[in-house]
Length: 332
Ligand code: RIB
Image (cartoon, rainbow, N blue to C red; front, side, top):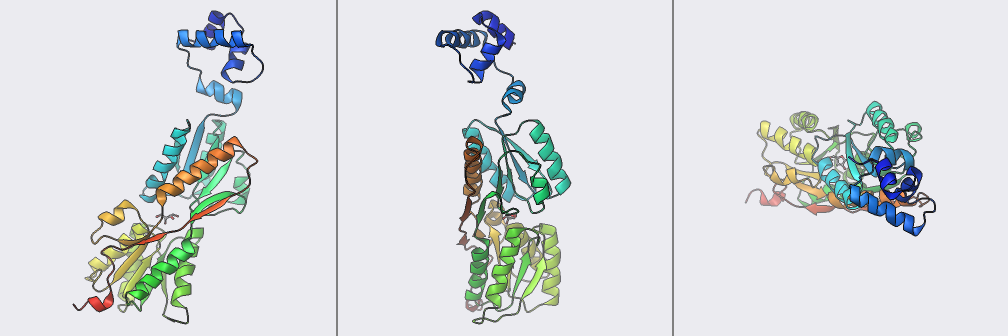
């Protein structure tokens, strides 16, 4: 394989001149540049990425940190980030952090040693202190964990209000919420949206809340407990789709029919919700658009690090499927 020295020899110039041509920095006269370009083509020379990263302090690499690769929401998000980064000639690295600060810090240090150009982070555990260790542009995606960073999110509060209002509109009067981890900003906002609707003076309904940690099994366990302790429940709003599926599984194992006895709505709009039986009604997030926008914003920041902070919040939309049903229809 040809080296930079071979190129210099064929072009009849120094290695430093070839390097200046490759990195487009410093003056090189037009004829010399032409000779170097011809030598590169003739030798089919491919500059070594590691060497270039060391020289320029850039690797043309972007990383995405996600808290749970097992949750289909995140591969769907990652797909969009990958598409946009690839389109802009960046390579893409996916890091699963389990929302564990130790893992986050280990990945952060390793990536910075490889001169990563920027990082998109979905996290609820990163501290302000640990953010100081990052010296490349960062975008917070889906969850807000610092007021200093540009963010791409959805309107979680309004989405949760609409989900709860939708169940009330179906005739549900005893609605439970299965929340995400309370340290996640979006879980907190979804919980608040639910509480504000059930406690609204127009309705004044009792509230039932249990934490399912955005996890299917945990949601199934807490839903089983809720349904056993509160047989009066006629609606569940789960803070994400995998927990919605967990709640439906819990109902099934207790002989409670969804949607005849219990309506279930969730939040996300992952493909798995469509495939569940019954298919899951949800507040759909524009997952692909969120990932794509975060990647675009990161690339803009890499190219111009002085860009001011931006917060973009998409809206969510109701997708009605088989897991919810109007109560007055139930006796038909
Ligand atoms: O399903 C994963 C959840 O965690 C989603 O609701 C998403 O918004 C994320 O924070």
